Amino acid sequence: MSQDELVELSDAWRLAKHNEQAYAAERREIEDRMLSMLGVSEMETGTKKFGKESEVTIVFRHNQTIDSEMVKQIAAERDMVEHASQLFRWKAEVNKKVWDATDPSLQSVFSPAITTKPGRPSFTISTKDN
Image (cartoon, rainbow, N blue to C red; front, top):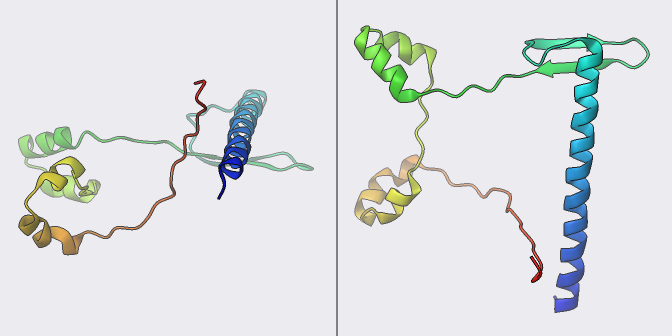
């Protein structure tokens, strides 16, 4: 690939990224107006359908974060470890910084438990001006 082709593709990528962000912002504004017009709160749960000629289906989701240490502490204090293990899933994650600094012989013990799959690469393109 020549430098000119890379510059051309980089410019096209920046334009597409800009358009993507602008369209996403516009779509979110329209969605907010629809929620307001329909008198629906973002705190709703489940799926709601509106309209006849143009059916609008809105699926409400709530993201939750869990303080794992607090759950463990509450469960231990109240002798409810069994309940906590049923109510919550415990997901192990690699501590990449520590893992990379660990002796390879120790890594080899745990390596069979780890599956690595490639993710979508992330791009950031900037010009020399910014």
